[in-house]
Amino acid sequence: MDNEKKLKIKSNLSQINKNNWEKDTLKKIAMLNIRQQQSKHRWGIFFKISSFMLIIYIIFNILYCSNNKVKIKHTALIDIKNIIQPDTYSSAERIIPALNKAFSSNNSVGIILRINSPGGTPVQASLIYDEIMRLKKIYPNKPLYAVVEEICTSGSYYIASAANKIYVNKSSIVGSIGVLMDNFGFTGLMNKLGIERRLLISGKNKGILDPFSPLDFKQKKYIEKILHDIHKQFIDSVYTGRGNRLKKVPDLFSGIFWTGSRAIELGLVDDYGTIFSVANNVLKEKKIINYTKTDNFSEKFFKKFGISIGTGLGNAILGIKNNKIQLY
Image (cartoon, rainbow, N blue to C red; front, side, top):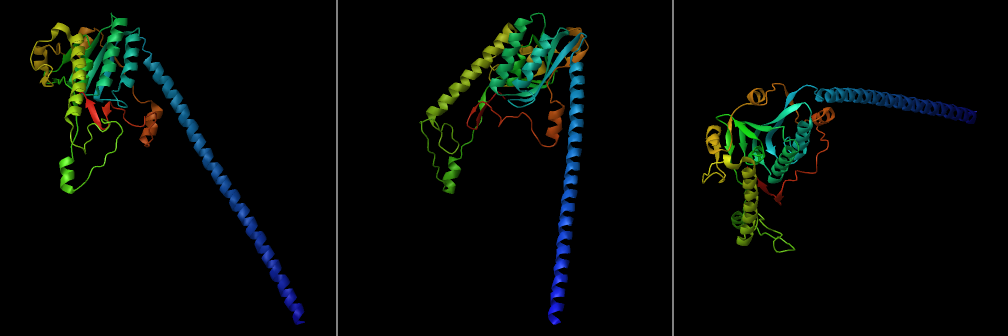
């Protein structure tokens, strides 16, 4: 009897375990199904939002492009501001396409460069300058004027000198026609701290201007020669653009800068003016359209969330290692 009870109890326990296993299995299957449904729902929401954003983007670009196809006479405006170097608002990559659109437009009567920049790299400034000179030859009847608001020095003045005329405010800062390369030397500090510099190179000049090594006189003279060559290119370009309007003053190309009123006296600029006075009184067309390239909708959207679209691996500024050659 006892054995029969034990067998019956075992059979009941086995049945209970079997039922529990089936319940657990069904529960797991149900939870998996719920999770799949939730995941499918989330992805559905994501694709709906993405599709909505894509539609908005397409509509925005259609409207933006249609607004850019101006069918009335106007003055074209292009902004050059802040530092002129790669991957910035005033890089040659952004400014040159804007110049081409402004010059090629059948309805633009002329172009105004609005300048608020302390300068930048010599390559970027030269690229923009050369493009202006090229376009002026192709479109000889379409003038380009530079209007300086706060500052137009070094690289930005390099660009401005290509304009037919330059207009300023009496308190604008203009000039600084020079080239520099900034660098630091830490050899004295390293000696005090007992730090030994171990620089291994192949090629005797590979470590040129290394901040942790003593300054080599021959290398220093070589860099100064490069800076002199770039300075001469700068001066030649200014003479090409400004011609005999420039006064022969000893300090004109020394890197010093002047107020707008003094710059007029020196022939660096031509007259006082704003974008509105130049549009109204010089170009005779008060309607102003800004051709400066800006981020499109998608770029602005993604940058807002910390995602950079179409940026390079770094600012490819002309320089030797970390020693930047600048027109500041």
